[in-house]
Image 1 (cartoon, each protein chain N blue to C red):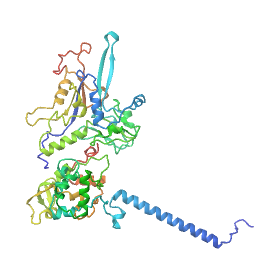
Image 2 (image 1 turned 90 degrees about the vertical axis):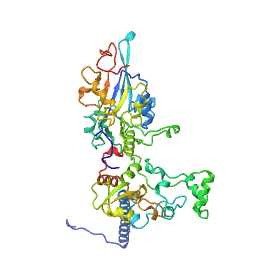
Image 3 (image 1 turned 135 degrees about the vertical axis):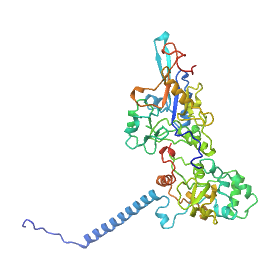
Image 4 (image 1 turned 120 degrees about the vertical axis):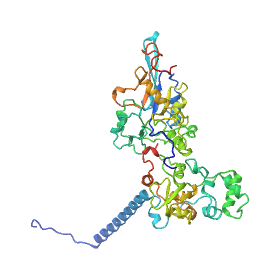
Length: 265
Length: 236
């Protein structure tokens, strides 16, 4: 490996776009995430204790009264904020921002003070209150590329860093550019989404053959422009999330399908 | 009796004996504590090159079959990658299946005890329970492929290495090719870089760990070679 031969389009910055208009609330992303990232089985008990671990979850909201009631879904995952409130409160620097724009949790450094989860406005950090356990039949499906977090450790969405690491390594090895939308690169939730509501990619990506930007960069740019559907979750807090949400299009949302964005349906 | 005066009781032989015994017991206890402390400290900082290696007990574990790396590498001339097949493109180096050994040992070396054991394993369809020598903790992701790719390949021979990914020192180059001169290019094969971490395996009757493989060991090498030292490089 020589330094100049590796084909990248500069510094990477991973980001995601979530089109709520496309989300059907099917929970495929949740299941995919649970199996990819060795997340223990959440029993009914754990949900009642509010100690269930779900790196990505679908929140459901009802809008309106019975005859005109509408159901709204919103997939919620770690926003990988550029100005993350969880990072400065960690007493042991177990959570920090790396050069690729990821909010990283270092399990072996974490002492379980739970200050980060208290400071996170999105509630997407989870504390292991118990030693994780799986039934014997599920032990063989554990992902060997992901650490099993023991009791007393904070954990959260990593944008499937194990997949990012593997694909970047392979592209370095073959001296090829890591293509945008590569299924081996995408996090498990993005691959599982049947309606392509989730889009993942590198914001600084420029295709070396076609000169095109990545899908997520285009979506972000279009949707956050004047008449776009894009918004940042709790953007007023100034956390500068790396996940862009695209709001739902219907008669009541105050946004027609013609407004500013080409992707609908 | 005036204030300030005191009566000292008479020191008997029994008291001296008791005191002496207490002293000896205390001495033994503190010596034991010291030995334990040294053991724990050396075990942590230098495992497995701890106190036992100083007094010459740093043997590797006894494997189910005494496998001579020396014979296979030096006498027969097999590459490391011939048996540890996935090492150049996967995370793990992989131990060969019994079937791979049998391709040669069906006909070769039937008089050796190890080969007879091997054939027994093969006829029973059982894998060999090799004892693992090198193991990093579960929260560390070590990838052989990336490390071998970095250290192998075409390298310029120089005295002082400024760019480790494309240069090699003359001392290291001479070990691979004794006729190499400075300024020339040398092709370093995948099997020639294993010893960076694993030491000279061919000279070990029982394979043992020669580097501590603690995080400091990894990070020092990463710093020296301009490799990333971001936590998420290895921990995720």
